[in-house]
Structures are given as structure tokens and as C-alpha cells.
Length: 151
Image 1 (cartoon, rainbow, N blue to C red):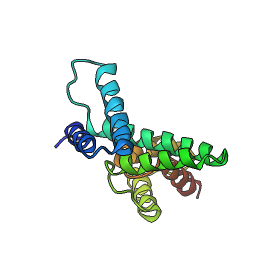
Image 2 (cartoon, rainbow, N blue to C red; image 1 turned 135 degrees about the vertical axis):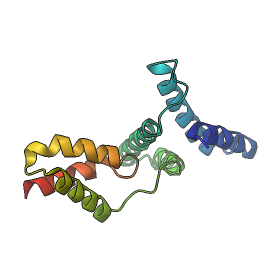
Image 3 (cartoon, helix red, strand yellow; image 1 turned 60 degrees about the vertical axis):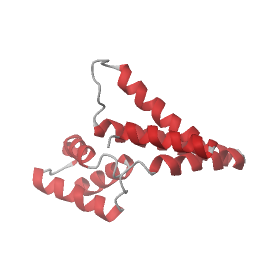
């Protein structure tokens, strides 16, 4: 079942349950997916899964950044709302890999592609980003690529 159908079904369930917080988060996901679907090429009926995952990661990142701003401003009521939305959106993402698993995958990519130094970072980042889409934060991936290529 596609993400869009799942989201639509979950929106209906949240409306019936009168769960405003969950409904708000689900509508944000649906809006982001619709923007992608209608943005570039209206002939494209299906959004690739990779793009959907990137969009969800972007929504999570935006909400976490907003939550940190609210926390630093001592607005815990708004912080809680943002973190609740993060928890809802993350349910649609694959399980995040541990740092050890990410490091092992990055090491494997470096070995397989014969990367020898920091000059190969772009190549390895491209491969790692493609393989780890939705499974790991790109900041963590970039840190491991730098660390392992600098050796």
C-alpha cells in the first residue's frame, strides 16, 4: 500500500477519533506529498518512495528545529506540540539504523569503491545517501564519511 493511501486512511481515522494533534501532523504530510506531486511534473502520478522518505525526513528535521527554538525560548507548550508531530511523522519512516550500523555501511562503501582520501567524499556521500535514505540522518553519515576517509 502506498504512503499516500496509508496517510489518507489514517487521516480518516484521526477525524473519526477527533484527534486534532495527530490530524494536524497527518495533514502536514499529505500537503508536503501533494506539493511534490504537483510541483515538478503533473504527469507523474506516483511519487517515488525515495522522494517520499526524503520529504518525511525533511518534515521531521523542520519540526525538531522548531522544537529546539521553542525550548530555548522556554515555550514548552509549543515544544510539546512539535515533538508530538515528530513522533507521528516518524511512524511512517523506516526504523533508523544505529550509529554502528551506519559506520559499517559507510566503511563497506569506501572499501568497495576504493576511496582513499577526502577527495572521494562526494562520491561516497552520494552512494551512502542513496543507500541510507530514510534510515539514517545525513549529518551522521557525513561525519562517518569524513572520519573514515581522513584515516
